[in-house]
Length: 481
Image (tube, rainbow, N blue to C red):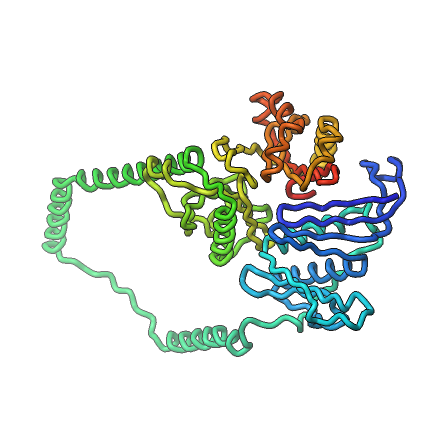
């Protein structure tokens, strides 16, 4: 039986094709998915690249092994052993800048044809967010027990001698040696200092009376000059600070709710790359958070960060560990904020040290610029709950789609869909122009129209819905399981 597995993320899509056998519900797989045991081919696509990576199992194993090892090196700073090029290393990843990584494929390593040389190598320049979407897709594959269960990632610990100290031993030991020497010198010096002898001072009766009179005079003089002006200045300063904070908050709300949106795809992509590079280069603070920090960020046409809002509680508590407060240009006039065109992005700081940036409204057509922004409720992250809602959304979509319409597409289309724990669709966004044109042929408008205001206030799970040009419906959690 032919089986296809899809691991889709915003910037990378990994598709596996192979053969397997049908399994029942009694084997421990609650979803009843068939087991893909033989891989015949795979395809890996990156957002923004026209070419894709295709090959068989041997090539697939080389790709996932190299990508996983490089990701560990990038995060830990400890290099891993590899051979550059050559027939034994068909896939190589190298860092070319602070935010770009070059994935190079040498086809001669995968064939016995001696006519193919290294000049035929293929390269992909990937942003950090694209690289880590590839790693996330590979992690989802390894976590999928129903897809090639015999293929596992062998991780080996790095020997301590492979790590390189950031400073030589002499330089690291110098502060401690100076501290010990200084402490010893101070101890020797204080040893020779004699202990002072305490002698109480005696005052004559006339001097005591004079001191008492002087103290009384000072007390009366200080009482004649109450600090009314100082207290008034302090109160005025506090009031002024409160007014500035209130004006800034009001301008931020106007910026996100009333400011005109920048929707030109080229401008949105250019500002997205510029924002990600600025955040990555400026993120020098030490961080210790365990949950991803998610923000909604507004960027002006010149690339300046004009404001940001917190999407989750961790983002509010750990905002000082991000570069956003330092990069923000504070707006105090709501009228100016209302007239400033902005592009809005979803920014995620991961515990692993990656910065992920994507358009807040997805890939909207120009006609959608006047639509109200999608306000997300508390996001559902429980894997079991997401799996159940994933199947519910798949059933709703497949029942509401006409087979002929699904097979009439000339290109893949994508939607972002929000669903409550009760299975109610409360919001959606078309992610490309073709998806907007096809929207009326989907059940999404009718499903959202049936939602009530109370439904929209519930927790929401986010899902990526893809309809391929072959008519295949694919549903997966927005950020994977």
